Length: 213
Ligand code: SAH
Image (cartoon, rainbow, N blue to C red; front, side, top):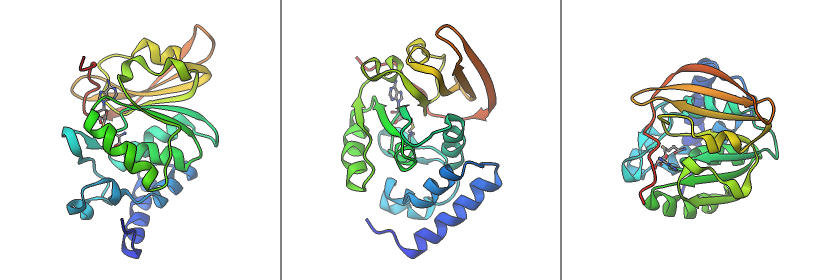
């Protein structure tokens, strides 16, 4: 569990890369600069940890590309104390970025193997979400709603209705929508009944899958 001088140096390079690609939110950049991403990957892959690339983790899933994490997090407009729901805990890296930014994080994962690994790992390295849940993200988390922000980190074939209904007025849902590739989409709740929708660029995610049951 070492975080060496070399790792820290590589991390500053990564921050510079992500900034060059257009990320402006200083809190996002600071979080990427602080979080030891190499600890979220198998030790054999440490050389890949600070490249701006997605990478395989357990259970056939991936840790998102740092730029993608930064892009989605910037769209969420996270403030200290924001209540954020993440769908797709995966390696826990995105959750750690949100915790580092001072958000109250609730995160859901449907793969039991990953859920178990990440549930132990995040507290061990000092990043404590409010709740890590084993379950189906299509349903959101009604018992903790409403949220300031909801971030979906898998490709959604459609926008699950429960996620829209679990936003506060003024809340933001950031969701990549599409089958083979996805359009990053932001929904802002402007009133109980109304949402605005803004589309951003194309991304590629592993699919948001229906529940195993
Ligand atoms: N945020 C993660 C990215 C993980 S990839 C990270 O920072 O590493 C997307 C994750 O979404 C995978 O772990 C996958 O198992 C999970 N997933 C897919 N469908 C899901 C669903 N319906 N509910 C919750 N998680 C889901």
